[in-house]
Length: 80
Image (cartoon, rainbow, N blue to C red; front, top):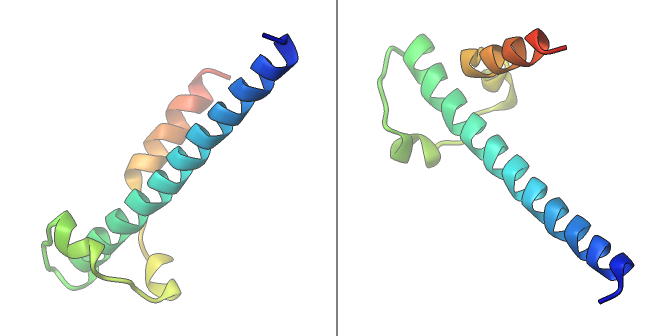
């Protein structure tokens, strides 16, 4: 097998995996925003299943702080 073809295949697979991970991360962040917004602003606890069905307005998403992503950023900054 030609090394260039093998390298191209590896890059293609890695690109698809990265795209899927980013798509899943955005989806999970949206669900977390919905749950946090309802918990903070409306004082309503909700399951992930219920949060998946709700789509908020853009201004509502901007009111939510996702602490899990701040911790991830802080952890990455420690290694630099």
